[in-house]
Image (tube, rainbow, N blue to C red):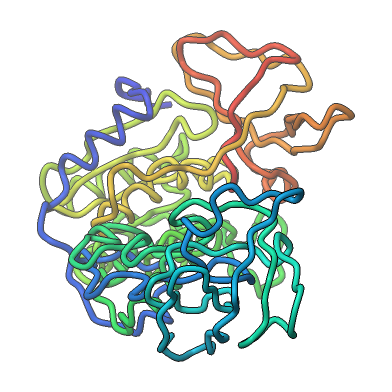
Amino acid sequence: MPEFLRLLPPDEARALLLANLASAEPPSEIIESSKALGRVTAEPIVAPHPLPEFPRSTVDGYAVRSADTFGATDSLPGYLSVVGEIPMGRAANMHLNQGECALIHTGGMLPDGADAVVMVEHTQIVRGAGAEGAEVEVLRAVAAGENTIAVGEDVEAGAVVIPKGRRIRPAEVGGLMALGANWLRVAIKPRIGILSSGDEVVEPQERPQPGQVRDINAYTLAALVERYGGTPVRYGIVPDDRTKLMAIAAQALAECQGVLITAGSSASTRDMTAQVIDSLGTPGVLVHGVNTRPGKPTILGACEGKAVIGLPGNPVSALVNGYLFVAPLIERLLGASAEVVRPSVKARLAVNLASQAAREDWWPVKLSAAADADLVAEPIFGKSNLIFNLVAADGLLRIAPDATGAGAGEWVDVFLF
């Protein structure tokens, strides 16, 4: 059995792969902002005007001159005359003089002269019905700016509100709508070719014969590619034939921005996959074996500026290493910010976990709430060809290479799927 070359830590292996990719600006396109969820901005978004564009109330109550309320309390209220009601959706065409106020609703425009709003629950009508001609008691003083939003308090005109390389979330969609930015330039989704190799692999719709298995990896990896913003392109199942694998891999590399080869990095066939990657262009294989569990046989290569990754055939190994290497690859191809925050939570480990020194271990875990409301991470034990270990998991627990394990009750980081 051929031996692995020098095993690299995952972080070092990933950095080496990304350093050998072409540094060209990702191609971009203009799309409707309302349909931009999950896309990555290709240019910074600049506010064309301040937000809000007029001073607004944040509560229901009375627009006032704050100085008119100074000293007002429940036992010694202030008295103001109501000179009108601010219409919603229209300009506040009135001016407040000393001793005057105006009925206003949440989101309404402050009239000239007003610099604060008294909440309706801190007032009491003593004459009239609360609109023009009424008189109200003010039971609490307010400071200038209280219960209001000033012009540009959210966004100033000309400010960069969304930087280049930001993945659009629901909040960004809302911000774009607020600014009237109905069109957005985003990076085009990179095409990622996916090849499954192995004489024993058949399509999921087929009934496997003895010794055969359905193709899992092509579909889990395609879903991973799509989730992180790429376009998966499946090239089908290739038999364990180097000439055929080389031809289809070359086609995929020509048509896509990256290529994934699954099952070709297991102990019996990884050398063939490495040879194929070396044949596709320079520098070829960069990493032949990663010091992690699962996924030690992973192969990372770069061919003429494009990534070619050989992933293990075992479904758990392939998908875990997809998170470690394929997701960052897609983010690089999209021009996404290098400071991507992975969603994670703190949890207490339910049992002791052993680990080999100098190796990075990733465990699928199930999260549950303890009686004291802390999260508990329960490792899911099983071999790396059991896909439902990941189906049952909420995330992955990482044991660093400088540790020899983690103890029960220890706080750990769980990276959410």
